[in-house]
Length: 257
Image (cartoon, rainbow, N blue to C red; front, side, top):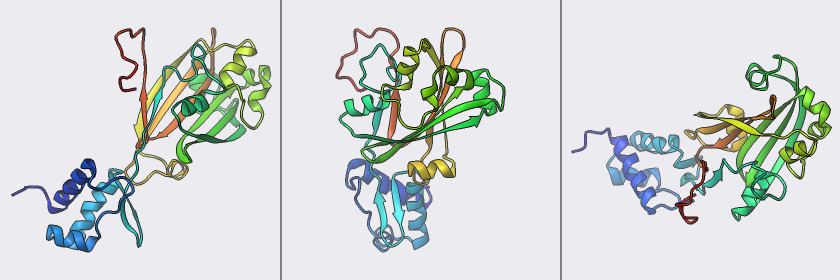
């Protein structure tokens, strides 16, 4: 006999059936009453077991509609090629990558003048509270919230590149625009972390209970100083990130990306 609590046995059995495809993405799980009979368990036990699956991001619950298996169509992002001008792109990196994957991109913008926070000031090497321009994007893949991206530019850079402060998209991408203005990004420093979402992040990305977010902070550098700090917040259940470092002649193009 299993030593696990009964609610854990319920969760594990249903998880195995979800993993095996017995319950496909979008399928509804049996009702609480049916699960009570199947597992010879109380309603609270069944609900606690289902709650484990909700907390793990495997199922979602709606009042009156029961429990549904969440859809997980993962988008794979090659972070080493993202914004790299040595790779062919038409427009900005987000639109290019999503379109190349056969998916449909959509994004909204917000541009505002904002004082530099301590974290941003440290990365841009400016004074805390000094003026920066924030370009904020809310991005979708196939109409599903994919990420938010917040990029801060120091005031001195905006004076030399005024389109950064204009609302709306920069069609060719900001990195290409800056290069055309004589300000070339020669490298970047990446920081990657995970945590649970804030209430605003959960709302914008429409993440369910138990789903973490992936934070990707990229500080871009010109020859003499940093020129931008970008924080991209991804849904943890719908995204995968990879890098290519160096030359990989032994790697087949058909290998997992």
